[in-house]
Picture 1: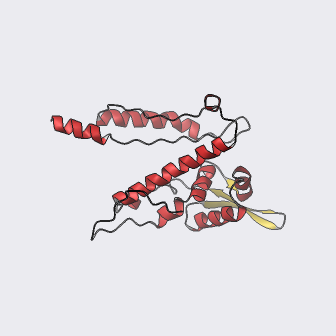
Picture 2: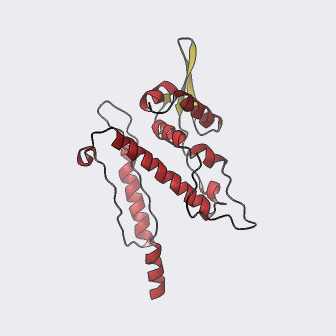
Picture 3: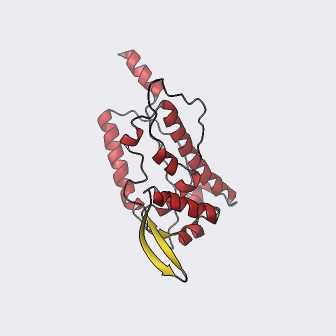
Length: 202
């Protein structure tokens, strides 16, 4: 699925847009959910079908095949189950990330589309949470907020390192009967109004 972002800007004349093959492969609502479900572990198509029951099986298998063919997912094991060969999938390190090289030709319109797709993914998770019917934000640990911070470049780098260090051991947790899967979304950006104000004062 390609989402058109309102207000996206066309590429300036004579400037190439970024190569979108990897972007198009990853940034699809079904494929993103598959990648997030696979992240940090090895799973079969049947396990994914059990965990993502709202995705039609044909769409799930089609997406798995596309991700594997594109090198985003790796088949790490094949085992015989009844009369079929069952594949076990894993996510190679960094394969599902758009790198600086992938984005070096990106335009403002490309970035707007990427961010819109990210927001659409969050909306999908939140919508599925609301649709299950028993809503208790405090009990379920659901929250969202904006937190303006005044930071120097070095303070921002320190904050990013501290946040990564705090999250790392929890991201590595494997599924277990007593564990609930949570989605943690985070976006950071400079406040352009604040930047303009600071520059005007100099």
